[in-house]
Structure formats: structure tokens, C-alpha cells
Image 1 (cartoon, rainbow, N blue to C red):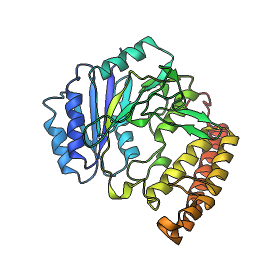
Image 2 (cartoon, one colour):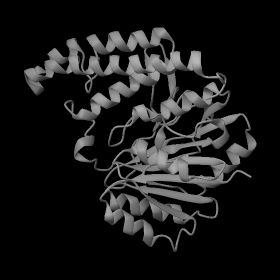
Image 3 (spheres, rainbow, N blue to C red):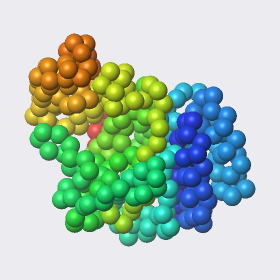
Length: 324
């Protein structure tokens, strides 16, 4: 039987967390275990979670000593016991039948190792934002990954390369080592851990499915001060750039790795500018923006070095190279 463990990390977002727990409490007959991980010095969220124990009888409340989503998820995975593991955020709302659809999908598709779907964005006014399905979601191209997970896909369900961590379910036995690579750990809502897990699941011979019917609502919430990923000078951008390079070096072909090096160095993005783009940003941010390409390329090479180091060690020292 495919029982479900739902894992929810949270940190100092009490109102969002309460909405999430309310929606979970309405379908506990289809969720066999709920594990919530509370960040450090967050008494409000802890007491809130404890107050739901009468509504969610299978609720486990775990306290973490580090404000890191990777650390929190690893704690939750260690505490889980069911065959299907569902990972999500503390600022979501589950629609009716969400867990039941996930159970049915895994029962009817034994080759499916991971299952995801849209996170329909909700603004502060609680009005659903634009939802226009696109042709491709979560696919690796030679020039990088196509995202668009929140939009949906025209031909659904579909086999993809990546699903988003906010709506991410997978089989326990699809992974040998039931943990997220701690190289990706820093603080805050670190990125790319779901890419790492998904690549491992694919390497173990399972399909990854994205399905429009497997959606949930995702509220646009306030982030902690150190987690301002839209701030070009945020330290989280260094971590996330390093993490992206790391997972590419671990799993992707050399041509894709070379592209992210050269594109990141010379062009980059609005958040991770390269040399050319940084010049166009002087008016908005001042001359200090010209230092960012050096910082980001340092993060890229740090990630790539460690990613290939992992690859070499696995090739020569892992006895079971067919499984992750």
C-alpha cells in the first residue's frame, strides 16, 4: 500500500503556516503521516503546530537547530516511514483530493519515481494569478533548464527532467540514500536540492511525471532578511549559483556545464550578472555591481569543482554504480 508522508518545513511564517495546516487537516484520511520541521527560535510556529495535534492525529512536530530548508527536509526524511514522500512549503494550500490523486498516480504507474504539478500562484489579495499552460516544463536544454512549473503544460501528464520542490512527491525506494546532498546546505530556502534528488531518481531508472491535475495553491509570502533572492547583492545568490553549478557538474553533459560557465561569466542574469550585463546595471546599482561577476564566477567554479569531484569519487569508489 502506498502510504503518504507529508513533510513541511517552516520558519517564522505563522499565518501562512496556519493556512497550510488547515488545508492538510481536511484530508488527513489520505495522508498517513504529517511531519513538520520548525526552525530555530520560532516558538510561535511550534505552538501553532502543537495546537493542530487534535486535528491532525498523525502529526509529528520536529524542532531544527538550523534555519535551512535542506537541513529541515533531511530531518523530515529521517523521521518519515511511508512509501510515498511528499515535500512542500509552509505557504501553500492543498486543494480537495490532492493526496488522493497522488496515491492513485503512484498505484497506477509503477515506473513513475517522482510526481509533480503546478503551484498556482496566489497574490496577497488571494486572487489567483495568470495560469496559461506552456509547451515545456522542467526540461533540460543545451542552454539551461526550462522552468515554468507554476504555469502548467499543454500536453499533460508528461515526462520531464525536473519538478518543483513545493509540489514534489516520490517513491521511497527510488532512492538508496534517503537524504539531500548536504553540500547544497547553507541557510534559508536554498535552491537546486530538488534538481539533485530528481536526477538521482532518473539515474535509478524511474520516470518523472508532471501533471496539471496535481496542483496546489502557492501564496507569495515574505522571506527572511538573508533570503532576499531578488536582491542582486544577497549572499543567497552566491549559494544558489554554487548549487546550480554543483548539480550540473554532478549529472549533466559537459556541453551544458561549459555553457553555464561562459554564459554566466559574460552575460549572466539580472540576479547573477556577467561582465556585459553588469555594465548595463551601473546606473541602477552603482559601480559596486561590477564586482558581482567575479563573485558569481567564483561560486560557479566552486560548485563545478565539487560536482566533478563527486562524479570521480562515485565512478572509482562506489561499488553499486547503478544506484543512487
